[in-house]
Length: 258
Ligand SMILES: [Fe+2]
Image 1 (cartoon, rainbow, N blue to C red):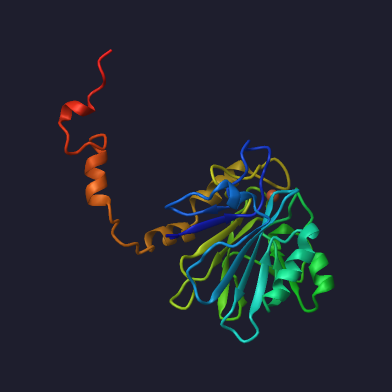
Image 2: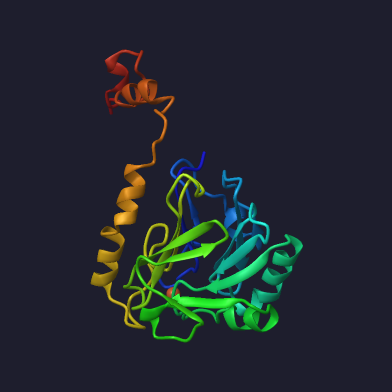
């Protein structure tokens, strides 16, 4: 069961020899097949939020499609689209009957060209969004604490500088009418087992450390997960304290004689 998800959007080849894991939940790890798929549908237990994870092979970038499917217009947004897969994204949006209103970026990417411009040219009415701190062009600029509404759903903007000066993380809304579990689209600020590089575009390792470790959102999410009591905990923890052999004599856990 998925309880909390961190979603990163690009893979930094300079940090890892393994493909980046883009989807994380507390109880299981994604399969290699999931990581490498061109088009992946990840189950999110919400009747309101449509969620699709999309993949661009060349830069190993994950693009995320979100939409409020209970709203009459089914307003949608894309997080970190790529120019080379813009047509694919537009096709999927048409097939799903969605109305794309925003193409948003977590930061100014160094490993691929954003699909924002291509999409804006092909889909009338779409607005581009990026952080004000990025000092780049867009239709709309956001800062820490801003909300990006699509239908009756919204994303919160969290400033997470350090990979680049203008990095932000988009977090799904909080409240009884918002989808659970909440999700955080971290760009390259936070990856599974690491973070994006910090040696260009105004990057700062100290700043990135503070971004990752001081986010009120993370603290709040983790403290308010309201998870059920683990089914196996009363059996598993005592057993695991004695090598998984709770009912066997203590002697069974002692090191083997050499
Ligand atoms: Fe990046």
